[in-house]
Length: 127
Image (cartoon, rainbow, N blue to C red; front, side, top):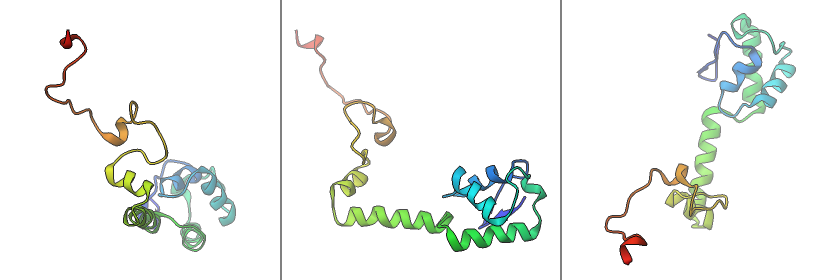
């Protein structure tokens, strides 16, 4: 199993697909990496030579922000928004959708499972 930037990429997949297992590398940048490193994208990751893996690692290190650095950068951006108490920062702090989505319905991913309010009366109970 080739190891790039501390992540084991899968052996049995083509190189272009295996590269997408790195955080911050999508299909487009994986194709670009293969092209820049001179590696055939359909070649299996287990068939890569050490020099090809080294070329990929050097390219990733030089031209891309991936893995721990990218995670740290995103966390710093969110904490900056929280610290300056802007609208987006407040939404992050409260665990609500940040990009303008509705919250009356369909916000379960951010809000978590429903919490039933005890003693709430329905329309039928008022009659």
